[in-house]
Length: 522
Image (cartoon, rainbow, N blue to C red):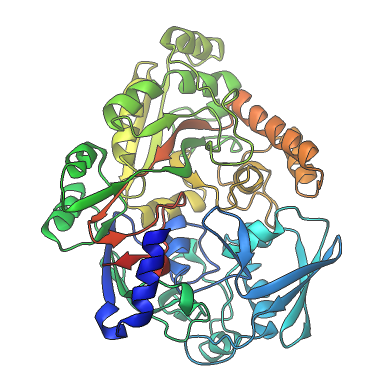
């Protein structure tokens, strides 16, 4: 704290040009789009947080604090009044007003995007005056303030001028003005994006929170898929910050005095999703039936996986074997229920035989190869473990941009995915990917067709339960049911060490996205 105070004093006394510093940041995964209402993908939402803001934001302890709203008051349990920050301007100089909030709510609710989870429970945004809005809720919404940071506000006039009133339909490969350009109020202006090559930003000198900003004036974000190439770029000085460290290189990087390595658990769980709803699995050798509808098959596939071996050999210790669909940093996870099953090939074979699939079967297994830590290597390990059950999973490894379109179109019977919990509350995962899909926020990212009446009942209850103890009990019961019914196959909670040049100070964030406006380059 004392060190940061001294840096701040220096920033106030020294010429701005002497302090101006660029930041070259590399990771393996690119953004999918610049449209803030299109894709609930953490790399995309994290980078777009530099340009777009919400009514609230998360502080250093992941608690909601004021952002584009300065104050909120509960008028009734279903009406919350938000006073908007005055004097804020979009990057084109136009003023931020209540009209932009009303417009952004209508836009994010369009079904072709998948960001509706962040406005769950909001029935209407009503303009009271130019800088006051009422959020009219369908019922009391305990997670309201935690959801709002990712409800990003877009300029209404800019969208109308550029015919960008509609959210991009990413899964249909739509391209739009808003998917290639950005217009927010945030600390940085996006100046260019070349997919899979570079995203560039410059500091917004008119940002409302300048006094709390570090000295990074330019950002170049470089998606570099190759592990050796990323590390080489850091070691050569071509990159200042690396947030995707190959696990095999962490120990070596720690010994380099030119670098700083910071550790932290990510709020993300890596898991396998199965098509539980179709009558027949796309691309499978078994026709006319879906083996995943039988819990014994799902359990057999889960206990055939040696999670400790994956941790030891693939992740080199940088993972936490998982039984739950949310990591330890998230409300709902407790150590007593997050104990993963031990690998048991004998029982797995017996379960498959009982279910009538003793001879095994064949099907495609979709996996990203540039999104998570050792994602393709993890999939290859799982494939070899399933082969011992005579389940022949044909691995289809693809870049994240292709992988996400495939499963969102419902074309993946079996696929690897990771899920970060932006709200740090178990409801987020349960509501978005486990609850039966509806036309609204409920189940909007449930692409594996999970449908369980008991879980639906628990999710609907926790969404409106204001008693903390009762709500936590509902979350716990729902997470246990997901675990015990093997509706997904959790593999591990992801660890995410970062490496940076010794002169860079970037506070580690569990959401795996540096807060560049709080980063210093000395």
